[in-house]
Length: 295
Figure 1: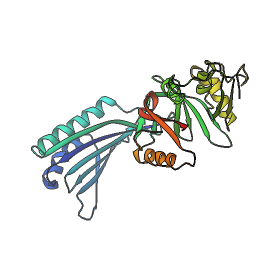
Figure 2 (figure 1 turned 90 degrees about the horizontal axis):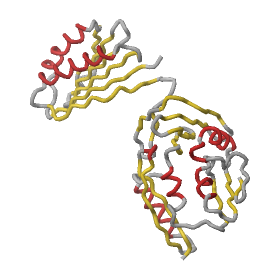
Figure 3 (figure 1 turned 30 degrees about the vertical axis):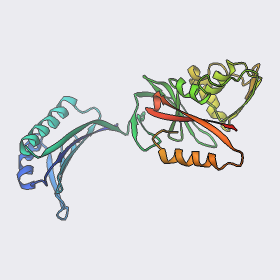
């Protein structure tokens, strides 16, 4: 069974007077029949845990530098209305006790931990995104990586490789940008795709009738999973990897982009390049796509 983790923070303009704040909160915890345990912090504020018979756990921390944090953990099937009432009562009481010194109040939505289906995935720049994922539709461990395809009500199926979100069925903007957004013509040309096991780039380029597309993907299990579960991305191009003309990161990382452009300038063959910033839906990020050519 999963647990829910609620967070309530009070940022203050002045240090906290523990003696005046804590007694006013204890009556609320006692009404909830929560048993109190005070922990020694060696003079660094007040720390107590409150445990209920139903498995609820509340951690109250009054930081000496001007921060009060409350963490509430409970079973996933606990009474949501009672939990809201408890948090509302604590927030109301703290507003009265800390009147005039509060600079910010922040209550975060519940974080569900240990659920059967994981909804939280990191971005390239270290943020955590919660998706509306409700099902794992495919999972395999290949010789190279762990492969998951998860279903999102908003984005369709999402390909996740070794814990990194790679592509969702909603992300046509990504595929179009990486192929040049119509500025490049592939008609009659020979094209090499390195990777591309989701089939999205292949499906887009085939529409332009190139002379030949060769796709080199190291992991057959990625192809197998996407062929079954990413049809809105690959169409039927992965069904047999044979056709008339084919066979078969983030704008926030400014330092990495600068280093990449610096290396482009050091190549023995002089080149020009252009870049395009595109919002990719399922990443909730801006992505940068580079096109480079010989001068």
